[in-house]
Image 1 (cartoon, rainbow, N blue to C red):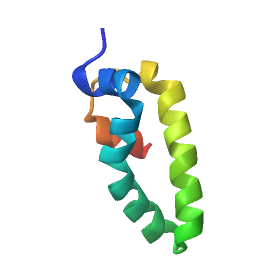
Image 2 (image 1 turned 180 degrees about the vertical axis):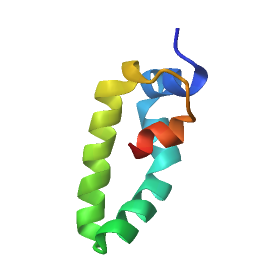
Image 3 (image 1 turned 90 degrees about the vertical axis):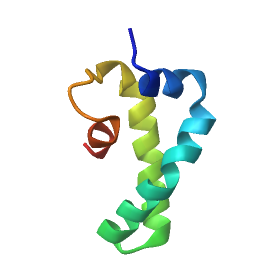
Image 4 (image 1 turned 60 degrees about the vertical axis):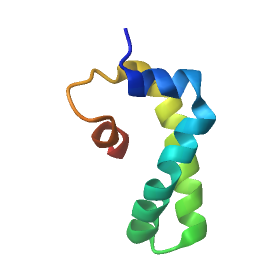
Length: 68
């Protein structure tokens, strides 16, 4: 059974993206130093999150898992 955060990814993917895209863009921009590259990296990150949500075991915060 998925926790509420993980269930949101499945039930409301647009809302999930809207909730997290801001901080993800900020982190990626700081790391990459380029806004366009950061947007591409964030997009790829969301693809990985959606593909791998079933591997989240709940041993850490969802945000920590997303950083990996």
